[in-house]
Amino acid sequence: MERTPFKKGLRAGISIGIGYFPVALTFGLLAKSAGLSIVEATAMSIFVFAGAAQYISLSLLKLGVDPFLIVVNTFVVNIRHFLMTASLNEKLQPSSKPVKAAVAFGVTDETFSVIATAKEGKVSSAEAAGVIAVAYGSWVVFTAAGHLIGDFLPGFLQAAMSIALYALFVALLVPSMKGNRKVVLLASSSALLSCLFYYTGLLTTGWAILASTLIAAVAVELLYVKTGRAYGLPLEKEEC
Amino acid sequence: MGATYWWMLLGMALVTYIPRMIPLTFLDGRKLPPFLTGVLGNIPYAVLGALIFPAIFHVQQGDLLFGIIGAVTAFTIALAGLGLMPVVLGTIGVLAVYSLFM
Image (cartoon, rainbow over all chains, first blue to last red; front, side, top):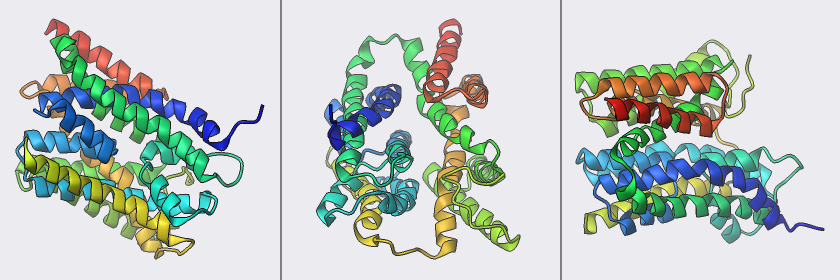
């Protein structure tokens, strides 16, 4: 039985759909505790579709940060997608600009990894759309579900779930750190800077994340260029 | 939250979509300067470092131990080489036990 490319994509997307489940559920839960209505919370998952940026926006909203700064922060956190879609361009079969513009909406860290590492040659837009459809569906549905079940979950469980996003960040970061000094250096230097800005009260959370990220990313790159190391795209583990 | 929220959402949607859309739609094989490519490639890891620390310690206001236990658990499970779900659910599980008894 021949599978259509879209169905093939749907199958490949299932692992992401499952992975998003606890993270989206917690997002819905936290959005509720940050004072967002179910419509507001679900709308963010529908229109933005960017896990880390959405979580950060919640913590900044709670802190009463200026919404403009939240938008700037979202931009900085998501600018990494620029690199991903640039490399995805090489992996996708040619198709019309509107089709590509539509696929672009669904490029997250996770859908990017699945599409970019697909084995056989170039991937069609239909297959990419299948992967994205599962991931997006899971993200939106479980955001709403998380908001709905908020009241029924016992307090201790809700408290415990507030760690979900940070655990996900750790889970995303640690495998890349193994055997890759550049990643270790990047993550630890930005973490130190961020702690410095936070505990000295020099910068507010949004600016601290922004500044630490940019300083670490530029400084480590300069260091690697100075010491004559190759321009590494640490998206794939390639060094050591 | 009101109108400000929806303007913020519109802004967030645009600044998320534009960096995703421009390279895929308009780049077509054009290459970026290597230094810029390098810096862009560094950003995911730098941003994760800055996102995790120090925020992970302060997830529950006034309960530093909660954050420390969470951080240690998450890093331990992740370093053991287990996947995304075990890290997230395992950390939630450990903290659920902690929250239940504290």
